[in-house]
Image (cartoon, rainbow over all chains, first blue to last red; front, side, top):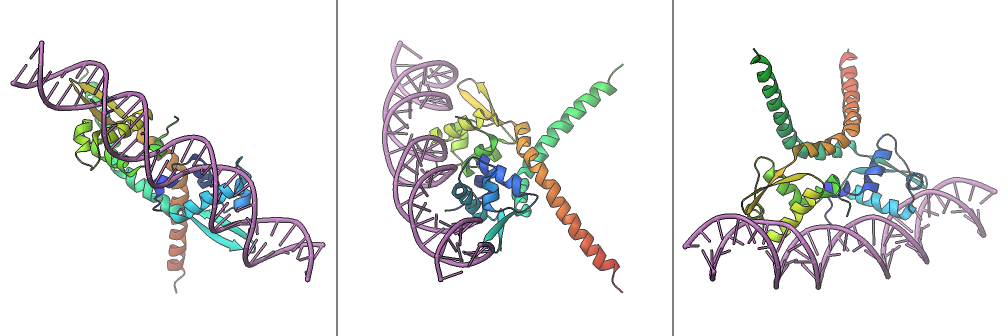
Length: 106
Length: 106
DNA sequence: AAATAACGCAACCGATTAGTTGCACGTATA
DNA sequence: TATACGTGCAACTAATCGGTTGCGTTATTT
């Protein structure tokens, strides 16, 4: 199965997990407590997130801590880049229109 | 069906369509020519993109031009915001480490 | 007016998804 | 050493996805 970052963040539960572990690493059990779903389901989500390297594991005894690989999130940011230019252009156009209206005032 | 922006951009074909119509509006037929898939399939993608307001239509005779609603893309950007803070912090931390190494050089 | 073009919509289909339950395996604890 | 805990993995299931084909509608062309 080919996984990419965009498919990974498509699921709302997965986005919630990402938000949870963004600041501090957590175990699957701890994560599952935040949702009304089984630990196994969370485990599956973590597996998918791992497959596209959005998450890294760190074993600590019998517990496994999962942490967000923040750098990987930049991939989404990178894709957005092209559109950011466009929407900034749109707004600067608007700015121009507005300032023209201003300066052309009698 | 509840659609959200994240599910919309999960599909690679859909991302390609978004990229195509970002700069200029296009008809379903014109879009379909860029992919090896049927017009109807493209039409379905456009429907999904419309459902979550990532795209707007403009009828012109018997043709319908689809254009990207760039502003809606900001929703993704907005979600990324929280993580952008984190990854910038990570990098400024790294910067600190590096500059400390520098200044502590004999 | 008849033929053609551009399109949306519905029905169908195989593949994938997110979830469940049940188990096996290593690690801590008594 | 026996028991409980934390976890991953496999099998199963209902729902959804992305695609196709066929058809109806509206607008242009001849």
